[in-house]
Image (tube, rainbow, N blue to C red; front, side, top):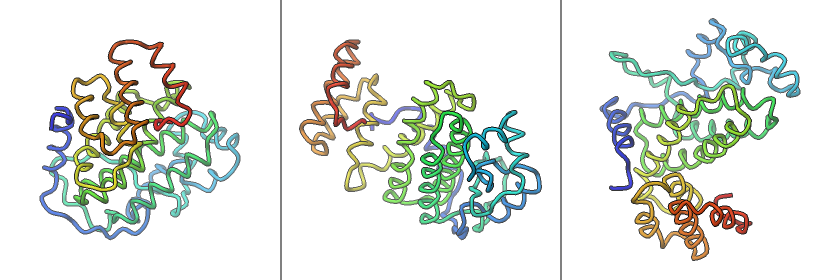
Length: 273
């Protein structure tokens, strides 16, 4: 499809080559027991994985002050019920993952829901750097399990559509607050990966999520094919939303920023809000 960029193809190709068969997933917790033991033993527990994280935001930041290493050392005695599997890079020659290290779809969905609750609970500017660092890494680990397990289109779409809004909103928040734990390039790569995988599956699932489809189109507003894709998806948008998205994209493409901001400000019930 012309709507999938070269980088998307590269990402999807490499991930498909990692595993040749669908492994079993037997870990019924957010974090495998083997990882819990390892991270506790090595002081690698994040502050949000401890009972300390339930205290006030000010106390959370006081403990977290001093950088990532201190944040982890402070949380050495983690609560297993709050610990979430950490992202780790795949190494060449690494032995096949144990089924006890992989979380089935139901656990992955519950973990996404838990992480989004963390975002809602700690919504202050002071706590945001720690929340962003924690949630973005753990969502990345969820996608890793999803890829390894080769989940079907319906399950993959549900996971991706649950996490895409976080990445879209976090980008704006991190840029506006100059978040110290935010890496612009890494964040852009992760959002692009989410959209690439979502695009791979969306044509094979129903019903369509209008908000995610609109976000995908806006994310790719500078691409030549975006209006062609909008037309192809026309039946999935109500008339008002279709017209709104079309006008916004055209305004951006023509560098008519006055019209762009006027459209956004006038659309109080915008699908993108």
